[in-house]
Amino acid sequence: PNFFFRDRPEAFYALSAANCLITPPRSKAKQREHREDLLNEVLEPTVAFVLDAMNRDGCFGYVKKLGLHGPTNDVEEVLKACESQKYQTRFATVHKFLKLMQTGNFGPIILDDLRQKYTPFTFKDSHFAQRDNRQRQARFDRGEEYEDEYEDE
Image 1 (cartoon, rainbow, N blue to C red):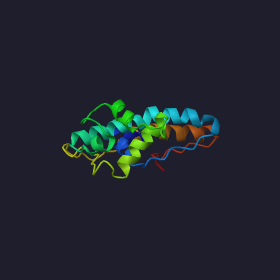
Image 2: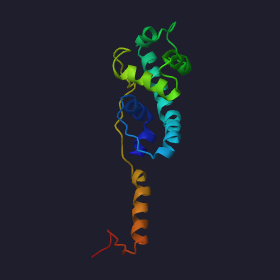
Image 3: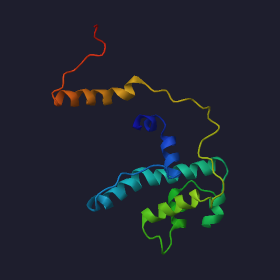
């Protein structure tokens, strides 16, 4: 649910890095625009998240694999090292980096920050309020009578 990812963006980026997010299919006309949005809003921040996780935990397998001089926090430098004749677009370069990570080429990586104390996610009424209001409005628009669940019999 969106509210979970708003409260815990690291969960969103971890799922994205593990290739567990499904992107909605788009028409051919909007495919290019969708790719740009996906790249800017999801994939590049995911690369930054993965790079931060590797550096945080001292997993520097990416340095040797990509031929870098040393560990870096610079996403641009890392993606430039991923570029080749075969991967000429930014989209393909980002996918190459993520595929190298997903297939274990950088070594074992833990995306969660285990130094932080775990706090369970708590659902709040406000998470569902907007959805309930939309459902009520839809019933009203269809002309259905509103039945108050809390009315005395």
